[in-house]
Amino acid sequence: MKQIFHTLQNWYYYRRLGRAIDKAEDMREKTGYRYLVIRIHNKIRIVPRKRLKEMISRRMFRKGITIEQLERRALYITR
Image 1 (cartoon, rainbow, N blue to C red):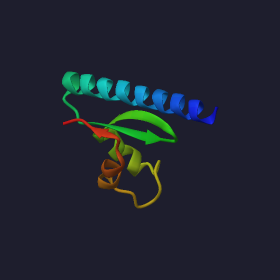
Image 2 (cartoon, one colour; image 1 turned 60 degrees about the vertical axis):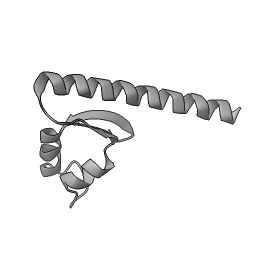
Image 3 (tube, rainbow, N blue to C red; image 1 turned 120 degrees about the horizontal axis):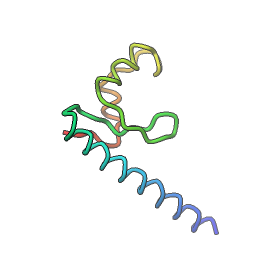
Image 4 (spheres, helix red, strand yellow; image 1 turned 90 degrees about the horizontal axis):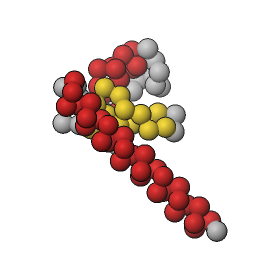
């Protein structure tokens, strides 16, 4: 029973991730900004790089974190 639960949980996670990546690419084509698909508070979020810099300056992340560290943690980065 646990195996079925974990299989469904993984399926939903990768489905949400795939949709987030598609949405980030669409937004990239429309605006030209660079977007990151990243997990914030256990939720998959699509955030423009410029907004991440604002979030860092407002201390929404722990003290001392840099944009490069967030890019390394990102699930996907548009080009």
